[in-house]
Image (cartoon, rainbow, N blue to C red; front, top):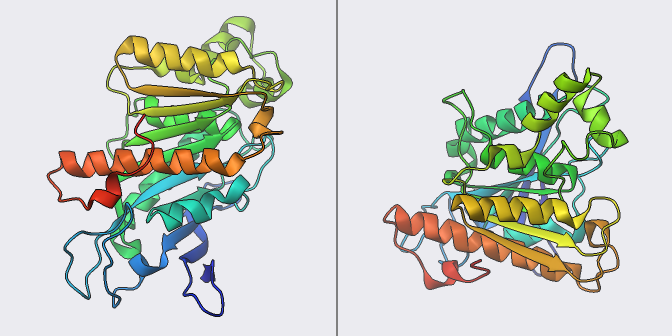
Length: 307
């Protein structure tokens, strides 16, 4: 366990539980996640200041309300990437808003083909659910957020219906520059590596199942979809398509084109603003979910991007 965001004058912002094994699959490396929990939420003896998405309004001293959690899914074309690294201070910004973040490993395409990656994301979410009391998490307010390949997995986790009753639904999903129609991209090397070697008809079937657009439904959780207009790696049309399909199905979706930004917002002068926008979106959706459950909310919890 470690702390982050600390200085000589200030208490740590986060308690970081590193290298938690969420799944052990025979023949593969153990799959790990790191869990960043707001420091005051992890300290059962502290006083509640009532601020942030995870704070419990009206909680007695010595008690802590569980905090919402976002699962971060790294990019890397499905064949690379590292759970420990996220751009633009994503982890710190979530924690500062009172939201825990779990950043996870998943099997890369050189280790296993689809749907192994989605299976891993679901396993990580089940792990968080089964350890929610231990870590002080409110998994009824669960977000998924991914960049590029991780965005594809985040969308699938939010949209694809699972046969396992133990799988937990997402409250909200944020996607950054994500492939969403893998049928159209199936001959790109990174996508072909994910899908594996198949005859044409079988390849089409696997590509459809790996495509978030295939799984769009009217009761999908709200989406925030962000994409650079100058992205030469993943065409912006991929995000536009998912947004249109979600809206046509009656789901809530907000699409934000980022002018002149490349893939992963390269060249954008203020990428931290995009992080703040996504964190505001999650804060607003978690506040909405708590209100729907009849919880009493501090007005500070409803601040942010409402979509």
